Image 1 (cartoon, one colour):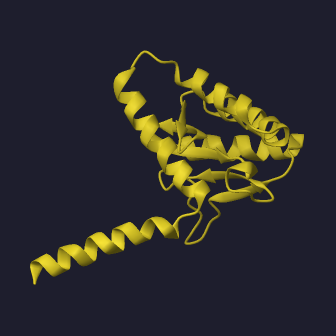
Image 2: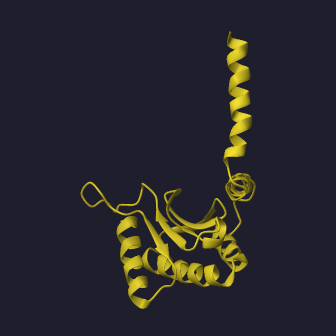
Image 3: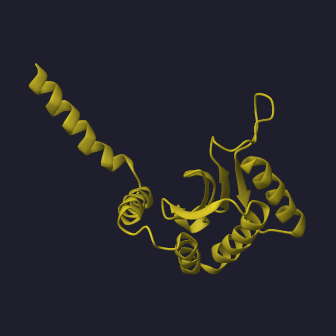
Length: 153
């Protein structure tokens, strides 16, 4: 009976790969690569890795990511830039607090600015944690700076 259960579990796990899109599988592979490289090279500049990744983005995503990068670091200079699933992210005490997902990552119509559960954005019993980005005005940058500063507090 136990042998049958193990075979069923293996079969289900093997079939689950079909449930992920090519983009999702690529993101998982990037995350595994990030974990391996972080264990190997403690002297690598994580901000340089983030900027190099941003430079690889298509023009629209690159422009947004550069703006977000500047705003995040200005609003919360104690956050550490890093890659997270192949995306620019900013961490506090080793945990991702905020990240930028380019539209090209999953072929969506807008980029996303997301906040993790460690972000201090609580407002009662419901609050937004993901924001769609298509362009950033000065007012948008100000709002992002306020959110990041509050999240990092």
